[in-house]
Image 1 (tube, rainbow over the protein chains, first blue to last red):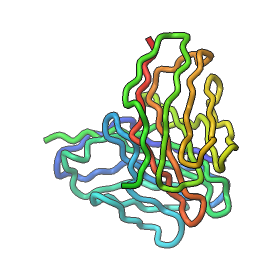
Image 2 (image 1 turned 90 degrees about the horizontal axis):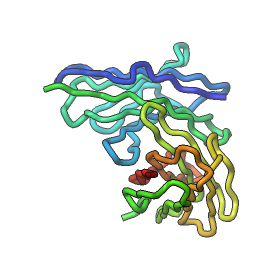
Image 3 (image 1 turned 135 degrees about the horizontal axis):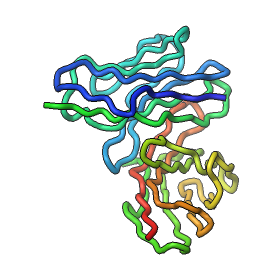
Image 4 (image 1 turned 135 degrees about the vertical axis):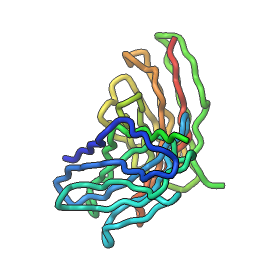
Length: 115
Length: 113
């Protein structure tokens, strides 16, 4: 069984400020973890993913996330927010190698960026 | 360009009518998925298919049906049995070998009047 909790349905930051979107997961097996971004009325686009290896992963648009097994977390960060980062962000977990690939998604966090 | 197409972008139907949402991919992916998205609820899996002529129910399959007659196509029918069909529907696909990433289509917003 697996689940994802995204803390905060809305996060508001000023342009240029640090972005931190929180994701905690539970999984009975070593997980694969993903962050997706969704702009209004569009599909999901992969930002970054963790499968194995280096626990700090870098993605597109300056985002990065760190897999912390002891904390069961995979928080998404960006040093400096841009207006164009305003979107919905989804964290997802799926069983790792050898598991059935059926991801479970969090409820999403809406990022609001103020000028 | 390779990708996933969903049509139409917006769809309106009267209550009690069945409606079919199209999903086509030219990525040569084996697996395809249908998700329903409602505000504040994330994505919920309706059906998925890993091979032609075979598919499995997801978490919220009641009131929906699918077919997988061709590798590149995975249409979803929203039947009149679905109690609350108004939602945003997303199709995704994935290669089964050497990848762990789903690719999503642009979505179809269904409104039942």
